[in-house]
Structures are given as structure tokens and as C-alpha cells.
Length: 214
Image (tube, rainbow, N blue to C red):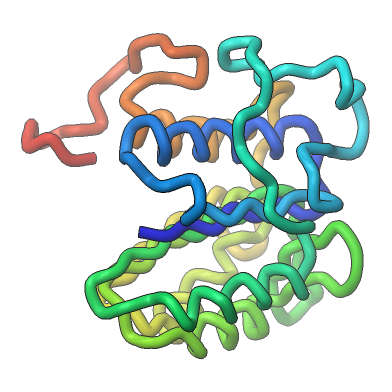
């Protein structure tokens, strides 16, 4: 099982979303940290704007950030990461891609913002997905504005046997931000974690069938 967590033009809340997902994958699902690539901002646990990075802790439990950032939130870093994964993915494997931070629409396509360099349009992003070998499961979760514009192309270009896509907004709409977390990302991750970002119980169970699965 592999994961790629991406945030380019990061603010505080975007980095907190990534940390919540990183902790959920490692602590709840047993992912090896080495199999989670975190591409954030300029290649470190940093963001633009308040609060000051040096004084910040993860708001979920007020501890230091645990995730290991492996590269910057740029198109080049994302493509290099997928290039490396292409040499590793095998038929039984699963890949989770979580895209956070800001996005937009250029009148033709939705795109993901980058820390530096060109933004990443849906056609270019999914063309890179199409270069991966055959594997079992792809799950793509996107928080950015206009993220729904990636939906059809992700499904079309995926080389996985099974593909799941979730977005915070439709193609021509904005997603909602918050002070400490983005509500869509926070709630999606909380369902997978089976507790909220602060360790509290959920208001309802995401396991609606009682089969032990979200």
C-alpha cells in the first residue's frame, strides 16, 4: 500500500489535513511511513501565512508534527514521485492520492495550485496516472476548489482494477476552508480514522453496514 499526500500553495489548515491523514494511515491502517510520500510547500512542514511555523503544533493533540515531508508541492515533484511508484506498483497493490491546498479553473480545465512552477491541470495530472502499471486499487481524494473537474478523467485514465474518487466540490464550485482544518478533508479522514481530529467520538458511525468497513 502506497500513499501520496500533496499540498502546494499550503496554508496552515492544509498542512494539518495532511498530518491528520498521515497519522491515520500509520496509526490506524499500519502503513509504513516509507511508503507515504508527502509533497508539501517548499519541501518541509511549512506554509504561507499565520500562525508562525516555528511556534505551531498540530492542533489535533498539540504535539509536534510527525509526518516526514519528502518533497515540495510542485508538479515536477509529483511526477517524479509517480515515476518512482511506477517501478514499484504490482498487481495486488493499492495507491491513495490525497490532493489538498488551493485549486482553480482556467475556463477549460480544473487545476491544482503548486508552490512554485506551473499549476497542474486535470488533463496533465491524469495523463501521468495513465503511465502507471496495472494494480489493484486507486483511491483519489481531492480537497481543493474545483476538484470535481478531475472526476471523469481520473476514472478514465486510471490503470487500477478499481478506482474511487472523492472531491470537496464540483468542477465550477469552490470548497470550504476552516481555521484549523478544511471541513471536507477533516470529515473524510475522520470517517477513516473513526474519530475526529481531536480524538473525540464521531456523531454517527461511518460503518453503516456494521461490517467493519467504512
